[in-house]
Image (cartoon, rainbow, N blue to C red):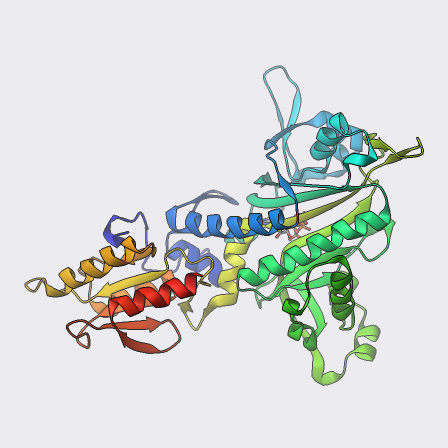
Length: 440
Ligand code: ATP
Ligand code: MG
């Protein structure tokens, strides 16, 4: 892509309404545009990044055997009346009427709808377990939408639902998701810590919020900092190994404020290991048994002829919030560096261009065509801005690798720079090999 052709409305100044760095960066680099309070359009750069995140989320869901479907954004109020949540959900729910006066709503989540789909066709224990998910827009009329896409009204979420015959089997589904989440966040370049969360009346320990550290996060967290050293690559992902891993995490105190107990914290965590900071919730997994299947009468026949309400769990990931969360984690000292897995372009060609000397342009364009031919997704800054202005711009756009054509470049060598890393002098062939290796 030629930068001059990319629809990327860069802003010179930081918009005053943006209070945290992810929101500032997203506006400045034209990733999003607010359309009304808490509602955003995703512009090409931001959308491309979100799609890459979505793809990784999808791959890890598919990997554990979850099946993708797509439910609508608009739901009928009837099923919510059946579950009893139509009244409970309160003002966060956007309620609408169609022309016949039927009560509808814009889905804030999908437990009811998936249960309705499930009960209509699945009648026997033989069809279980099932894991179903979709990646779809949600709407919550948040009381205080803020921080851009971090807490907005319309957001993109992956939500999965598990169906099992009993608690033991449901625990296995839960474990699969637990592990898939850790792998997903790791691929996104994030260290997300699973923290025990409220389970409500069901009790047990099957509710975790996945939190990444960030000063600007909305959740206060208290933890033993050794929990961050947990290395998931040692675990295979079968049920026993995930139980081991959960035990390992369980050795370290780590909770958000809703579960915080000062006495406990001070007793269990030595002073030097205590970490009190803030975090961003990027995912939440939750087992709730027959909380919805019972009122919605979603039951299956067991082998002995008895009927049982299916045991369900739900598993959310904030796909659009993750775009902002990655920025909060990776935008350091005013320099952004996207993780290789989600970067909008793999490399940027940044030449110094003179009006009366076309040689750098020709060389840059040759490099551009060569890399494109070799399946490298490259952006070419063909604008006539001064090199220092280009660097400033790319500090924000955050492409992790740069090919610089300035005074130091020679006939067949290019300055190849990793952002926040070293600069080497390489031939095009060497650059191609390097970038191909990084991709794989
Ligand atoms: P929060 O405590 O942040 O309001 P929640 O408990 O309401 O989150 P869930 O219903 O579990 O969230 O939704 C799953 C995921 O969707 C969350 O972990 C979060 O990443 C994302 N999410 C929830 N609400 C919003 C929002 N208003 N804007 C953007 N993302 C959101
Ligand atoms: Mg909420």
